[in-house]
Every structure is written in structure tokens, then in C-alpha cells.
Image (tube, rainbow, N blue to C red; front, side, top):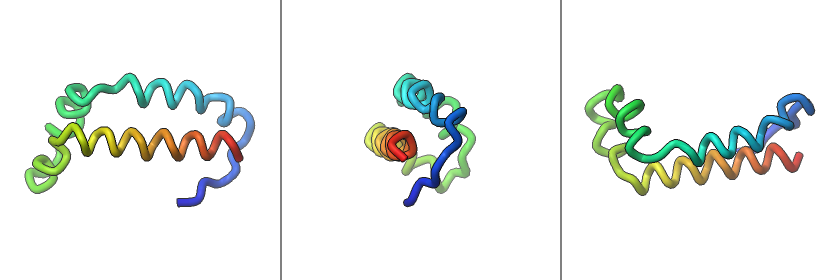
Length: 68
């Protein structure tokens, strides 16, 4: 996925976004997100490995946006 160039005002906030992404633990994700998904998605997203993959992808995209 290609990240488009961001205005400086948003780019300055990317470090905070990365930190916030890392602060969300699996138990919080499961309680606040997975609990509200449709039943057919709950099993898949109830995996700590899936949450780790999501975090990795989000952080990667934020870092890419920062380097643009």
C-alpha cells in the first residue's frame, strides 16, 4: 500500500501515533474491538498473533508516511 505525502502538521504527530499503537495490548484490543465484531470474525481476531500482525502493519505504514 502506498502512503501519500502528508502535511507537516500531521507528520509531526506520527511518533505519537506509533507510541499509541504500541500501547494497545492484546487484552484491550480483544475487549474493546473483538467483542463487537460479528461472530464470524471474532475467532480470527481473537488471536494474539493476528493483533501483533495488525500492529506491525500499522506501525510500518506510519513509519513509511513519516519518511515521505
